Amino acid sequence: MLHRRLALAIPVLAALALATASPARAEETPSASIQSLCDALISAMKQGPSLGFEGRRHLLEPHIRDALDLGLMTRLVMGPPWRSLKPEQQQLLVTAFSAYSIATYANRFSGYSGEQFTVDPTPTRLPSGDLIVHTTLKTADPEPVKLDYLMREKDGHWRAIDVFLNGTISELAARRSEYSAVLRDGGAGALADLLNRKAAELSK
Image (cartoon, rainbow, N blue to C red; front, side):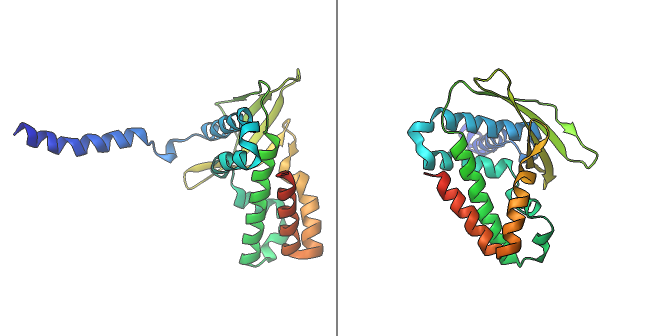
């Protein structure tokens, strides 16, 4: 009888253990999402020379895709012309923009000299319902770098849709004029080629 009770209890205990070890994504906070990205960036920096570019890209890609809404960021950076593109052209640009964004992180965060991220656990809520997660990056310079992540919720998960340097300089706005000009003059194919070329250059 005892053996029978143990046999029945084991599957229940296993299920409880799995539930405890794998918290639901809905419980993840916006700040925790960015903290996870920052932790991955520090890890890539510390292992930078030994990993090489491809190793850092491989390490960072899942964290970047989880923390950033690269699809929406692509649409936002393209602006109004996005609506006139065919679905296959939109996907072409999402793929190219994502590859370039990931390559940019893998290129920038390549070495470690004692840098440290601090993520504010209390985001600023905007009237739109979006949030801003405030972070600082301490480097060898006396003044830390301030990076603010504009977060938007989708399907219970918060992802960044823009990054502001020192609270004012939008990463997407900085790229928009260049991208819109190429898109206007050469179409989606020309812009995708440009982004893929930039990504390849970063890997060298």
